[in-house]
Image (cartoon, rainbow, N blue to C red; front, top):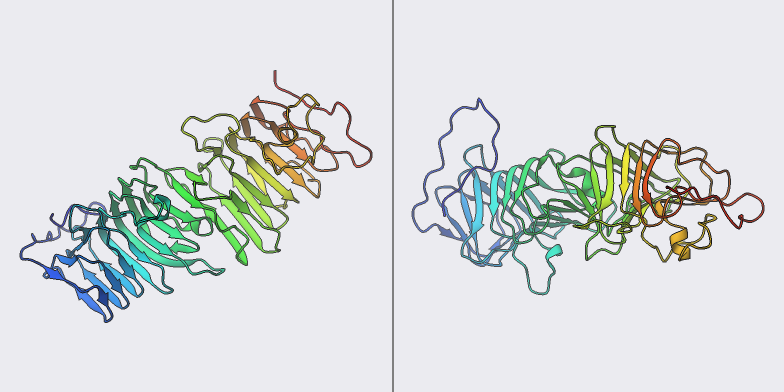
Length: 435
């Protein structure tokens, strides 16, 4: 194996650079433990790590250097790993043998990766008794705490042929603000799996050349666990997926603890939800700012390969709707699954409806303590709901959510009737249905 193709470039017009020399000689075999600062040079390549490495200092890797890692072995970084690749003179980290190596990982406070013009390939091998969703060719685990940690800086980096995820960032581990031009291709898992509180740090890159061409949002942490969580989901060329086999939660914005929590979604973003997952917003502290464009709507839909009505819960709003919350130029499809935890906040659908839970669910579910003062949903299409379009689960004025929005293939009501301020619901509550 040679030093390989480039991991990205700076564009046309650059001066011609001297290519990396062919590898000669047996290279340098390193001890497992690195406790003092070291520089790994191109001249001493390939650098061989048959048993992996544990780095508790700073290791700097020069341009054109090649590092080869033993099968199922890791490079564990408790200090700092820095690569100084250049356009056309990349650093390469690859297999030493046929078996995939493990990961470049950091689970220690302070451990950081700073990779520039680098190709990393052939890793991501599974450890014993670990499920694939918990592995990645680059794997960083943040420390428990309230603030996100920018532990990973990637500039002009290519991650190729990972046996699991390309990048796995757990807890609050995040990319640096200046990370850019990341390419992930040929990953058997997701190109990136990242906690929701760090999701706004996913860099510009190319993520579509993978069987699971989605960014997986880990939902073990919720927006609102930090003092002022403010996350923006940027357009990154592939959908975001909420939920996987290891998740028990959907995407939650605001958790009723008084901490401000805001989720902004850019026009053109697509969010796909796994079975029975959903997006919940608890106000007044939780804010959803999802304003798409007529030509670039925000899409909320099923993650199933063959979507069907009721695949996922839908968008749920609890407590009170914050004044800043907006949902415009969006598409909500294949939602309305039966939520066994739902309560009958609205008057529901006519008595012939099969179950109480189906009566009080919808593509949008309003389980509010305080009635909204106006419709915060406009220019939005709701389609293929297994229950209602909008379930108005509150007590008070019947704010109209139908006018200005579109509805297609809704199983029950376009919008349910809220409970009146005085008296009980009618035996036949209003339930406009599609023909």
